[in-house]
Amino acid sequence: MPIARHQILITLDGVKALQKTGSEFSCRYELVGFTDDGKPRYQCIYLREGEPEAILVSTRITPLGPEARYFNIWPGLFKHHMEFGDGRDLRFGSDYAITLEGNS
Image (cartoon, rainbow, N blue to C red; front, side, top):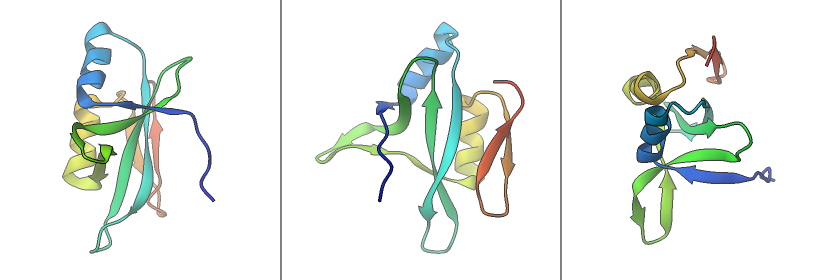
């Protein structure tokens, strides 16, 4: 059974706005499944003090609404984190879980 969460949506433009204004945020990456050839896929969650979790979504809206952006580790997730992440180091576990270390 899914876990109920209070979440909002954020686009890359929203993340760029956070960076531009110097807003403090952190992020995490959740394993959401695997590709047909067995590669892990992740979604990015942005966190700000006093705000609900924000799921990164595509800027384009489909007829069914916004869709979460999914990343493979290389180059997608790595490149995204280097450009739009919180500055912490990525650490990959043997179960494909990602932890972030360092100061955000």
